[in-house]
Length: 278
Image 1 (tube, rainbow, N blue to C red):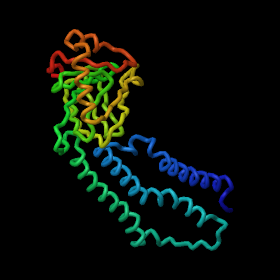
Image 2 (cartoon, helix red, strand yellow):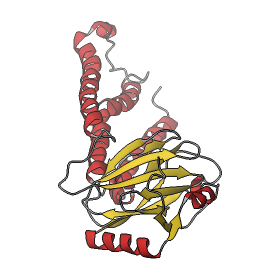
Image 3 (cartoon, one colour):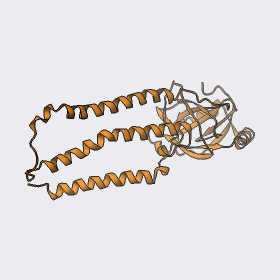
Image 4 (cartoon, helix red, strand yellow):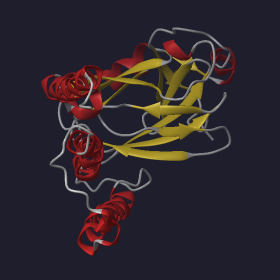
C-alpha cells in the first residue's frame, strides 16, 4: 500500500507553507522592527537571532524531512526497500544524529555566553559623546520620562540626539511592566522598588515606536510612546523650548499623573525636583 493522497497533499502543503513563510520574512523584513534595527545594540541582537535560527535549521530541517522520507521509502508497496535491522548499532549513524546536535549546542552555548556579556543591558556603550540620561517610570497606563540633568520631563514621548548613547534608568510606580523600543534593542522589565538599566543608541535620525511588552491590565494596548532621534542642534532646541514653555511637574502634579488613565497624549514638563525618580 502506497502513501495516501491525503498524506501527499499534507506534505506538499507543509513544504509550500514553509517556503511562503520564509519568503514573506525576507520580503517584509524592513516592516518587522526586530529585523530592521536602527541602532548598534538592535543590530547585534538581530544578527544573533538570525544566526541562531539558521544554525538550528541544521537540526530542525532534517528532523522535519526525515519522517516523510522514511514513510515514502519504506511503505509496504516499495518491495525494493532494504531491511536493515542492524542499524540500531551503526556507529556512523549514531555519531551523526548525536554529534551534529551536540556541535550545534556547543556553538550556541559559546555564542550565548559571549552575547550575554556583550549585550548586557547594564553595560554602558563606549562613545566619545556624552550620554543622555533618561529615567523611565512605568505608570498605569503611560510612560513618564525624566531628564534630571536637563531639568525636563515628558509623558509618552522621548527625544535624544542620534549616534549618542542613551542611559536609561527604569522603574515602576505601578504593576510590573516592560520597556521596549524594538528598533533600538531588547526589552527590560520595570518593577517597583528596583532600578533597572538599559543602554541604547540610534544610528540615524528617525521616529521609533516604543511600547509595553508585558500585559499590565485594562489600558495595556494604549501604553505606547514615540522615541525620536534627531540631530544635536534640533535636540538642544527642543530642550530649550520645553524649559521655557512647559508646565511644571512637581510633587502635586505627579500625584495626579500617577492615577490610572488610558491613551494619554504626549506632554512635556519642566522638572521641579530632579530627585523625583529617587
